[in-house]
Image (cartoon, rainbow, N blue to C red):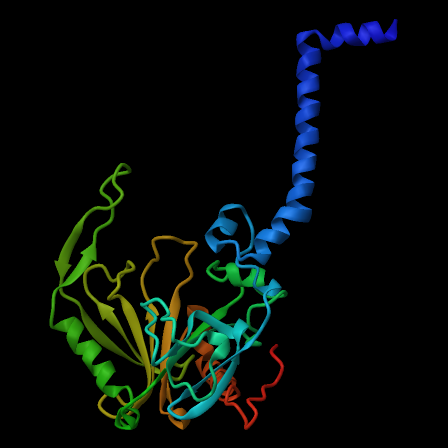
Length: 322
């Protein structure tokens, strides 16, 4: 009797609907198990594209599951060895391999490079204040670095200099050039939308100039800011300039920071700090969140120590990564 009742209930609309839902739930459970235990590990193993991972909610690029190897080169004759998880963007730019061109068959692979291979530049990414690279503990932090509430990360670029005289001159010519350039041309100002249906209110050409603000007591740096129409909003030209040294003399550090109201409040304003590494005849360029500007000396000191620590010994020995 009970079996007949069940058979009759299943034949009804609600019974069929319940059966369909049960089948779908079982399929979903089976597919989830298959994805977690079989498919996902295989895709990770075979380098699933990072964009696809992001589309499907993964924390890309799962770098903690990749092997950390030493990447070797030399900068102006200085041998270096850098753990691969420190490297960002193009990593090491070798002189015999353009970053814009595919690798030629005769060009060595990264794992085949030695400290005999000269390089033009390299790029690093580390978390402040410990300067840890990307790894199992820091991967989620890395992908939240643009969040104003997220951890602060530094993007560090080093470029070999072919003219030691430029290091002796310092950043004074660059600083004076920026101040003069903005005053000598018309700059594009983006106008705010005139109504709620407009995305942009168009553009206009404006005159801008820098005004000297003396020495900032919080940073100890001299600084200047652009003044003119639109200086309350973010524009490519709207950057405050901070420097150590004399405007008409030697400048050892030059820092340019976002200024004005950022259109997207979820985007973190940043500063670009440039200085020289005389020991390697190289230029260092560090990008960090604006809130770290008062700590610029600590940032510079730690970055210098980090980079100098990548100098390779006779056997390319390196300390363990963080």
